[in-house]
Amino acid sequence: MHKFPKKERLSGKKAVGELFKKGNNSFIYPFKVLIHKNNSPTDSNLRLLITVPKRNFKKAVDRNRIKRLTREAWRLNKNEALEKLEETSVYLDVALVYASKTILTYKEITLKIILILQRLIKEKE
Image (cartoon, rainbow, N blue to C red; front, side, top):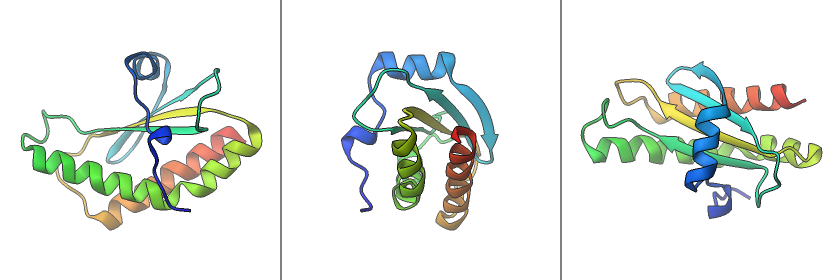
């Protein structure tokens, strides 16, 4: 099932603040990836936050396009990672911060999202 429901989106000031304070950083171009293992069980084992800095893209149209492409790539490729996390009862919060100054194609973004998800699976095994 390829869905991206509300329960899989990271929201709330406390949860987001904790992710940015305590999360582990890594960089997979064009994304800065922050991962935080959540100790308290939530609705979903894997919650995602996507941000695109206004500093790099002044027009909201561009920021929204990048978020839309990223969300779609995540939605179509997250299932394997979600299944692995459900088996191990691990709860992760993930933030993807778009760091490039140019808009990449959907194909390039998809490849990077797959790489990020594979790394998530590898880290949590």
